Structures are given as C-alpha cells and as structure tokens.
Length: 399
Image 1 (tube, rainbow, N blue to C red):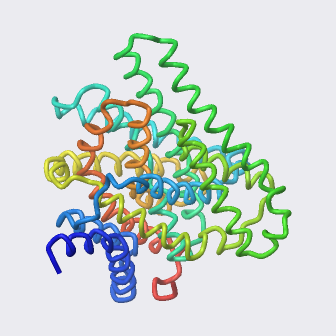
Image 2 (image 1 turned 135 degrees about the horizontal axis):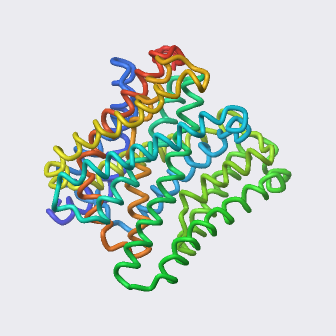
C-alpha cells in the first residue's frame, strides 16, 4: 500500500472511527466511573483534533450543517419542554432567567475589559454568548440520569431563556457592528430584526402545522412520528440556511409552538432514539474538534476567569430568588451550578453570525476557546453532580 493509498484510507474512515471510539469510550467510562458520556465525546474530539487526524477537518462540506441539524433537534425538544403557563403561575422563574442572563452579560463584559487586545464588539459578543447554557449538554445529562423535579424543570426553562436572550442580544451586537462598518442605520436594524422575526415566524408556522402532519398513516406508529419530527427539523434547518435565518431560534420556536398545539411526544420521540444518540455523539466530537489548540492555550487564563464570573453570576441570582420562587436555597444553588455547560450552542451560533458577514466571528470564537473547552469538559459533570445532590436523578448505574 502506497503512502497515498494509506492517506486516502485514513481520510475515508476518520469520522466513523472517531465516532465509534467516542461511543465505546463514553459507555465504558460511564459504567466504571459514572462520567457523563458527553464529557467523553468532547475528550475524544479534542484528541482527534489535536493529532490532526487526516479527514477530520472542520472545513469538509456538510459538517457544519449536520452539526446544526443535531443541535436543532435538541432545541426542538427544549422548546417542547417549555411550559409557558408556568411563567404566568410563577413569574419569579422568568424573572430569575432574565436577571441571571443580564448579570452574566454585565459581569463578563466588565471582566473582558482586563484584556485590552479585545475590541468593544468582540467583548459584547463574548458577553452575549456567555449568557447561553448548553441545551445539548444539559438535556443529555438529564436523559442519562432520567432526572425529574424542581431543579430539572428550572434548568430546562432557564436554559431556554438563556439561549433566546443570547440569540437576541448577539443579533443586536452584529447589527451594531454592521452599523459601525457601513454607517447605514436602517439597513443594520432591518437586517437584525428581519432575521429574528422571520426565524420565529418560520419555526412557529411549522409547529402550528405539526398536528396535521401527524394525522397521516406514516405517523401512526411511534417510529413513524419520530421520522416526521426529524424530517421536519431537517426541513426547517435547510430553509433557515437558504433564507439566512437563525435555524437555532427557529427550532426553539418550533418546539414551543408544537407543545402549545398539543402535539404529544413519547420519551423515545423526545430523544429521537438511535438517530438522536448518533447525532449527539457527532455534535460533541465536532464541536471539540473545531477548536484550535493554539486558541485554547492562549485563552486558558481568560477562559478560567470568565468561567468563574459566569458561574458566580448564575448561582448568585438563582440562590437569591430561590425562596421567593418556591424552592430551597440549596436547590437554588444546585440550579445555578447545573447551568454550567456552554459549548455546542455557542460555537454554532458564532458560525451563524459568520454567515451574515459578522467579520469578528473568528476573533470571538478564538477568544472564547479556553472558556468553551473548560465548560465542555467540566460543565456536564457539574450538572450531573448538581442534579444528584438535589436528589432528582436516579443513580447512574440505573441509566
């Protein structure tokens, strides 16, 4: 076999090989040490990216789209789990989400000021992204532990608020940058508003239509309905790409409206079964592989500072609002800690801004690389332990 043949072989099997290793290693470590599977996926992706395995390049056509589809499925499920009536019955939950997101934005923006090489718009973008918690990481841990209870429901709802506000504020930052570059106020404002409103409308329209789509014979079985949901999310993501909208915001809206339309999802449909598991492995391996190691090393100090600031902001608010919102201070603390993961959503959201010509997207991701890596690896572990400390999770060996 020639060197060329060997190189071609490695390129051909790179992704299947890495995904298989990630799956097997994650299962082994989960059974032995109860380590969240998500953490193992990230670790394998990091190592594969570090050794620059042939074929495991992030510029392969189609990989970003696959990752977006995987995250869109998660955001659809996240949206489906949101009970809007709960916000009316207990407005403190909504207020806590708004306060902790706002405090996170403010403290992170101030902290990034200690690094003078970061420009104003990069600092604003980092602060916007730091508000978001990882829906993929959190929901994977929740499923893994079969967790249920007050803390679980709060982190799901707070994550949705975090993600929504992160998208909204980042669009404002992108619009402000476009204004700074072009000087056209009307064009910058219209571009941001158009993306936000149209994404919500498209996602809501598909959610409104779901009951009709599920009336067909193909959806009579649980597997048939799962196929309809997956294909609907793929359709939504494709349409958002074509229209240069936010597929993440559209998928979240899709899930919220589908629930309000009384669309019923079984447990398997929520997690999308084997397809969801496979896409989940790919998503976390891809997100870890997309990070540049030079950026990670250079940004570790900044990342460590921002992690501490972010965790402090979220736990401070959830603890302060715990009793008035109907839970104990301990559960308030566990809620804030459980919001630690922040990875796939942030990386793909940055990629979406790059599509709409945000010229500082690469600089923003480079500055956040250290923070993303720390929270990719440790965030799911913190969430797992917080849910176990709140006594809302079955033991890992039961999963």
